[in-house]
Image (cartoon, rainbow, N blue to C red):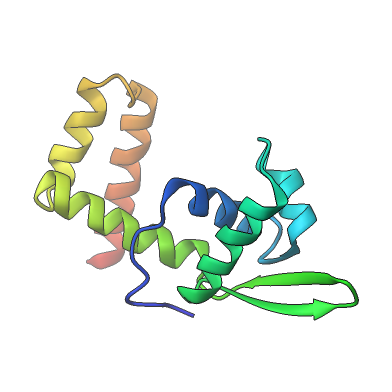
Length: 128
């Protein structure tokens, strides 16, 4: 399901969503807490989960004494929306400017640049 008005997640909520997505899209609060890899109080985690429910990212159902959370937004859809937002806001929609910033910042290796070139070549061939 794609939530077109999903908006950008704050880092802490994104960490929670990443834990849910890594679990296969459905998990419990204790499992999320264990996956986060950083200490978080049960109260703070509950607050993040509640906000994610309110924003339409998660649904919650009770199984016995445990709340089970299900992702309503796929990681792929979120990445696509977030990537487009970052590209548009910071690089005026220019993938070339974005890649140049990664290269200049030392975040893109020569091997990764070659992989990107190969990928773009594939896309060009598929689109022909």
